[in-house]
Image (cartoon, rainbow, N blue to C red; front, side, top):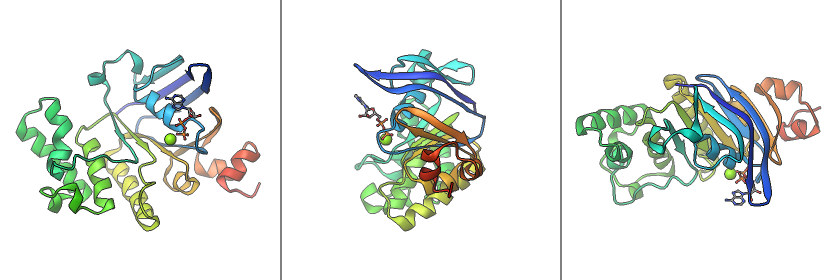
Length: 238
Ligand code: ADP
Ligand code: MG
């Protein structure tokens, strides 16, 4: 596990600056939700934490290491996306083990890790199935399984539930929180859904237009929104 810190982080695409100096401190084991309207820079920030985008200026530190100085294989981070692209011609077991196979882990270790993740996610009966024979919720669990088997220092989620129906979304929120309680892995979770943020986060980072508007616990933001934007976005009466 590890703490994550984002220091005066800026990102420009050609002439356009989309992140204007972001500072966030995430404690070891914390579940932090980045929330804000579409286009405010959430995915860009998450990809920068993952080391998937060049940094224009500033730093992202995971523990005592600068993310942009690490080779991809050294980045101990697993990301779950909204379009959980599973390999259609691989079984659930092969989908979950694939990244470990690429890392040349031995077969018995891969099997042990996949079995453990399947057990945690309730996927044990489905290990021999192909993605087409799974429900949306089961596919989402396989996508999480692929992240869990890596046993990463940090989990990053980018709107993982937005393709699911409302009922399943509520159930998966609870499952992801339970998973976090069980594993204790530092997590950064992106959503544009205020309810998801309020119910899942230890700490919420409210973003707008590439700026941090406010950082606090759900209760802090609800009771003491710093400005009208936060108040109306979070839905508090202020
Ligand atoms: P969010 O995830 O909050 O919806 P994004 O991080 O995807 O927002 O996008 C933030 C801004 O950066 C948007 O204005 C978007 O158009 C712009 N942007 C994102 N990726 C690129 C890119 N590869 N090239 C140019 N502009 C981009
Ligand atoms: Mg996005």
